[in-house]
Structures are given as C-alpha cells and as structure tokens.
Length: 124
Image (cartoon, rainbow, N blue to C red; front, side):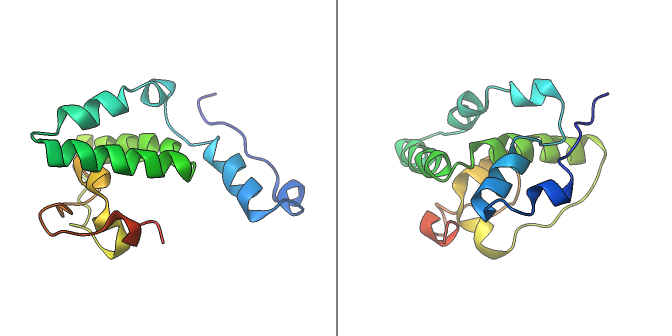
C-alpha cells in the first residue's frame, strides 16, 4: 500500500518530456512524512553567515523556477535513508557539486561557496 502505482508507459507515450517529468515528480517513492519535512527551515538552519543565506536564497529560487523543489525533498529522504542503513555514496561528481543546497542536504561533500562554483553550472 505504501508504493504508489505508476502510469503505464503506453499512456505516457503521447506526452511531452516536460509533462512526463511532471507526472513522475509527483510520484516519488518516499514516505509521506518526508514530503512534509521542513526542508527550507532545515537549509537555513545550516547557514552560519550571510553569504550562505544568500546562496540558499538564490538556489531555492532557481529550484522553484525549474520546478525542482520536490527533488530536494526526495534527495533529503534518500540521503537520510542511506545514512540510516550505512550505505556509502560518493563525495560528489559532475555539475551537482555546484549546488550549495545539495551540499547542505548531504548529496555531496563539496562546498560550492568555498570553491566559488557557480550554481548556473548545475542548472545548465
């Protein structure tokens, strides 16, 4: 009962890529309480200076603009689940390391502010 059913692929064959992404992003496989997690408060609580707060502001605006906020909730759930089960994941690779928010969530271990990485690299 916890796992939602997915649309059959045949029914999704006539939708645009954008619509396909939107449908799938509404069906993340995670507990309901993870969807209710106070993520924005969590991110700001990790900030220790104004530069970090401004970066989180900037990135959250971009995640919202690109309709990717639900992805952050899922990644928080995924990272917490991996930690709880002693699963090891990499330190970071590719353009994701340009995101300070993903660093705060724990997706990677690269502080993009320290290394002066532009968030635009992640969202290209």
